[in-house]
Image 1 (spheres, one colour):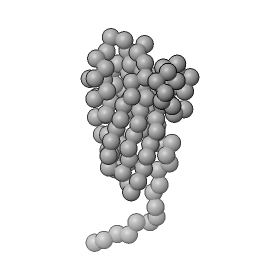
Image 2 (cartoon, helix red, strand yellow):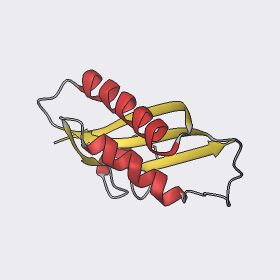
Image 3 (cartoon, one colour):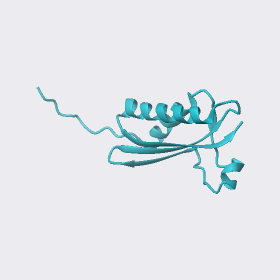
Image 4 (cartoon, one colour):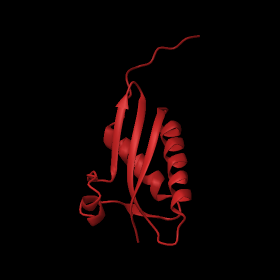
Length: 110
């Protein structure tokens, strides 16, 4: 028996951004998302998005760029890798989107 879908489900970009942010903040060592006002973003010549997340979506595939601040006693590489894994798993599990890339930019340590 085949049933037809009663309509369309659309997920707002802000919802995806919230999923990404929440997944990143669950990782031990992540202090917060970087903010536009963080001094290092200007010095490095890289614009930080307002919420610390940029998403590119094409054909149900997402690329996420995250800008984070990590704890000064954390292993930065391990934290970055864990953030990549958690963000990709969260997006795939919660909304069923294919994740092309999760790029993590460490903007500062605190």
